[in-house]
Length: 281
Length: 281
DNA sequence: AAATATGTGATTGATTTTGATCGAATCGAT
DNA sequence: ATCGATTCGATCAAAATCAATCACATATTT
Image (cartoon, rainbow over all chains, first blue to last red; front, top):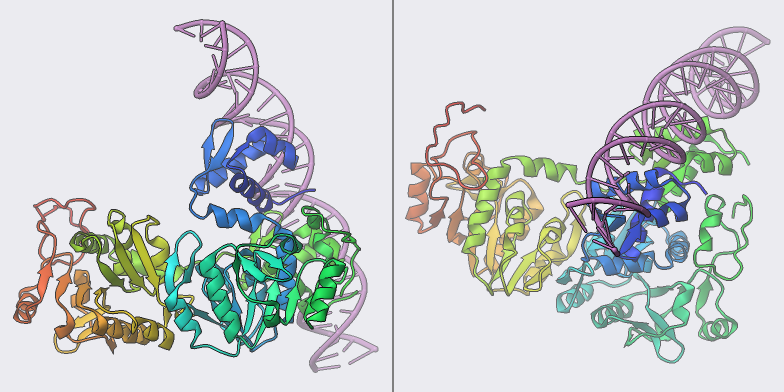
């Protein structure tokens, strides 16, 4: 597999962020390029103040938004698949709320072609990622800003949300439980998203398959509030039955992998993703 | 499968937007056209500022706030001086509102040492620049987000501001006029800052000397609302008299030269002798 | 139908990136 | 401090990619 320079550097950067430390030798080995190239890449990243060079390799510079970036890299491809599916279901001239999690974050770049879209968000990181095109209106929620998560929560955020109705809420969840509903590991996010869902005209749940395994601490909402689940592979039979019994539509990729990026899906290795050749959906 | 040129370019563009980068080879392979054609398409898209070319392919272009940077560069040193002066006047455990202009922006990095500070802001740009230290609480105002200015305005912002009182408002202005008061070139900012000033316990005006010359279009507030003016050099006599008559405290660097056009103050401590022989401008 | 315009693919020379080599610098252990 | 083993940085040839050009096919206009 050959990468462009940018792709390779991006890959190296995520390696640095994931593990704190990388070695030139290991990188050269894992990406199948020469050590000279790896050194050039590391030098370039260091010049951009993205990493810090150390003897034998490199390590990350600051811990500031490490947690988010590390989280975002986890199941990255699965989240992208979910994001793309969700984007396809969003029409022009709609109003949507997007939560501040990493899954919904992947949705942002896919919205560049929409027109007349209104996006409500409490995450600065998401807003920065949103396209700056005339057709898209962005509404941010204020509130207590949390630098590590780059989002706003608290009474002010809730109050702002209370001024808004009729949108479609797109939320992720850290965990799912049949009897306890959607859960998050962060209390304030959970509270805010609950409010967002309650005011929404409809709510879609965006989760990758890993979320079906591990429930989290704080409840967001019950299953009654959910009208659609968008995920990256077909749910297990018991989940399919559970969701269908509650009249919740489940959406996942229809076995057609987009032509250009078939081999990318191997990272998380979801159950049988047939790498078909060029087939349009 | 045959595409028209436009269809092909749309397809390529969405590939670039969805994946972060694409390679010429893969695109040529996937769409079944020659690499020359793909390069022409990429070039065309790049000419339209839709993507960025990189060696081996293309990637989506990063959001750049060029306009903001260009503006911030103007009178940069003067703004830094004003920012530092203002920071020195802010005690621990205070609450301040900071406006979204470039002058107040320079204040942000100077607040690292403060403890228990609460900062209210409507500018993402500013919030990103604020130090991420435990002692500082940040409150953002939501509202209609303007990507070019990276701030939030409109009814939601005003409503959020109405929940807050008792803070000190630090605002800049694009222009000053003795009879018309503080003015801004942007209507929505002017409206929001007026609200901020009206709810504030005290208001400080942060301006560099150039603002005393040119009034702008939209009025923010009258001089009655201002309790302090922080600037980079002593005001001209008529302004000094005007401000003193209104009981407005004027603050400027002690060792600063009288108001002159052009020569910027040196970064740390300007020398007492303002007559640098090669005063070039 | 002829002429024109536009788009495509192949070729060629220029440019960029990569990999290998070698001396210099750095680290760890004696 | 000295030695041995890595690692680094610079240099250069090879490989990959790019930009320009030309010939040909297709669509559009006259």
